[in-house]
Image (cartoon, rainbow, N blue to C red; front, side, top):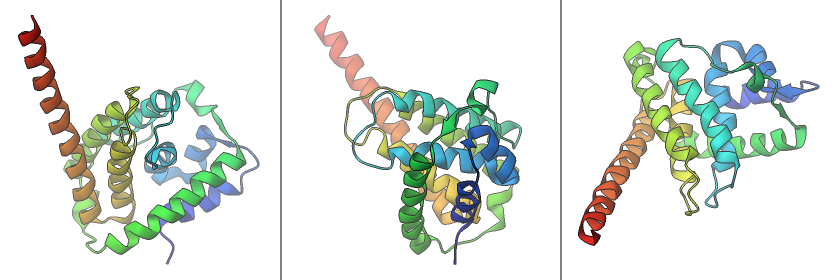
Length: 195
């Protein structure tokens, strides 16, 4: 059975020109989550993509804010006009097929709690934190993949109303926060010793 992500992407594939604005208009209710997923799929690989993370990270961050506050996509007029070529969209679509096959094996705990306002606030905050980390220009392997995986699991969990995927995604975000705090304390300590 096809998930909601694949169904939505297949609908968008048929558009003569694909822009972020047209995706929002075409997908409607699920546009916020679909935008996040389309933006993170290029990072679902171990090698960072230089230059792309800052732009797409900002798009994802805005969707996290939108999920927390307005429950609808947030895009500037300039972002709405961003064109995604059919070749690039095909790559995104194939990556989505690959990863949704994996998540469908994990997906087993559908729960109405996933549609609640507190759940959306928590997930939106996790998306904001992960996308902020994703946006950092770090030339480190997996520096894009880990936050992208967190966002992917949260968004697919919300789309499919699966609590387990959402918990896994939020767990990865908490790990990212712990790593940032741990690194900050080590750097601060080293800096104080050096002075």
